[in-house]
Structures are given as structure tokens and as C-alpha cells.
Length: 153
Image (cartoon, rainbow, N blue to C red; front, side, top):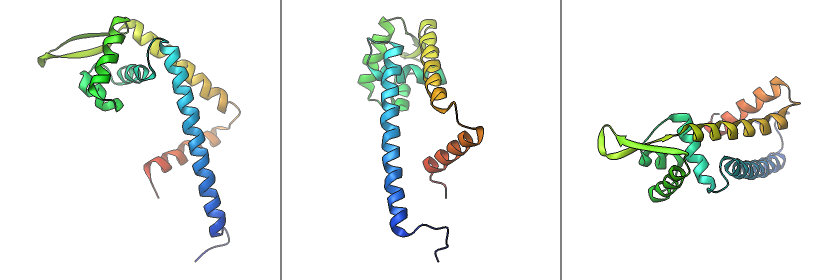
């Protein structure tokens, strides 16, 4: 049974289409911000390098295979980027104490500093976009996005 607060089926369909358009716009804006963030991190590297660095910043030293799986890249591309980042002084690697054939990759102090600066710049961008929003509006957006992503009823 439809209540007076429920939209008509055509209104709901129009709203669902509008939601899809807004989500696509959000993804495009996020992709553009990620590209700018990656360039800020290091102009000489492809954007995927920033994803590796950001993951290491958040989770700490790891094997290249773990990093590849975590950031959704194939192992050879991850290995190539890790080598380039190591040559630029952003990463270091050391033998894996549990398996001397493997290595553990760690951000250097320079790599950590660049990630922190880049994340601060990203945060400033989001802060600028939501500066005039109330705490309730931010809280509501966070809750609704969480609900959408989790698929909660």
C-alpha cells in the first residue's frame, strides 16, 4: 500500500535516475581529485603509485603481493611502480624476516611526508566544498552514503 509520503512510481524512477547521475558525477569528481592528488604526490609517477603509497601510509610495511591485492593491481604493475618509487627515494625494501626470498616494502621518511602533504591537500579540498554545511548535514550525508555502500535497508 502506498502512503501519501511515498512518491508515485514515475517520480521514484526519476529520482533513481537523478541519483545515478549524481553518483556518476561524484565518481568523476573523485577521479579528477585523485589525479590531482597523484600529481601532487609525485609528477613523475602514474596515479596508481599514490594508491600504493597511501595504502602503505595507512597499513604499514607489507609484501608487494599483499599491496597489489589490496589496491587491486596486478603484481607485475605493482612491482614496476615499487621499483620506480624506490629509485625516487619514496620507498625502501628489506628482506622479509619470515621468508628471506621475499621483501617487505616500507615508505621512507620522504614518502611519508609526501603522502601526508597530499592527504592534507585533499582534505582541504573536501573541507572547502563542505565549509558551509552544518554538522547535521555532514552527519546525514555520511550516514546515507554508508547505508548506500553497505546496502543496508
